[in-house]
Length: 368
Image (cartoon, rainbow, N blue to C red; front, side, top):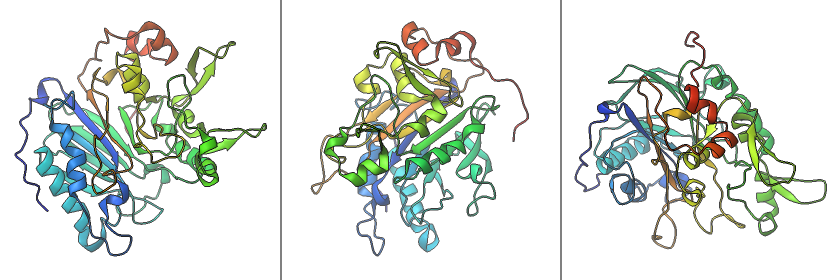
């Protein structure tokens, strides 16, 4: 399927060594029915189009290097017909020649897909060919940047939507990619879990049905239901409140940072940084941030480029997807990006003060 749109004109990304990342849970991969897989990729076109509209994206003049997509339902069937058609639509919409590949998945033919611009990044290690021998390698891709020959690791995951306990085990598979890992790591996708903190959107679980509470919340001894946050906290650290229950800070964790907190600490208003990634009226009790990009080198983030794209209208009585498109840009320059706009108090709360001061360079160790 071809979308009638002129290719966008972009600035030269080589000047800044910048890479633009996007991530999206595309509801059922655009499938029109649950039986025979017939796709409506005009929805994907409309979702991706804001990425090249300057009034909607702070990085519209820069090409998207990595596009991670969850729920590519049935795209690998019939010789990857759905995957290649989606790649064609994204290439036409964004004006770049995207390569595409399905990623390993063990919960049925609805796993993630990854699109990348081969003029900007080139894969050097890709754990594919079915589910890997080692479960921590599923969806793990090592790229090198074409212009700088630097390496980065992209991990696309779609965590279990039904069980907080299973999500915690899935998070534990990623622990070794955190502290001390030799290259920048980006964990992207629908992780079906949120984090605690004073600005993260909360869901009113009294308005949600039991099956939703059982899937994404836990019941406290007093009977109240609260967000199940253990999986995310395993990677980014727990939120520790002060003795008055007001101020808080991140503690422990495997060495990842959540992009909403990085964006907020570097100048993005709270209302934009902590925007829900699920559309309105999808989840009873309110939407949350469950679509994530977790990073190990937050100092590579280009301030002001994190954006949750909120659609303005529905089509045929529904949103083009139940989740929203999210983006952020990172600079892989040799020297860490200077952060002149980091708020000192927020930097301390989110463990960014040491990063801003030292660059948080981990000790050298061989690549694995």
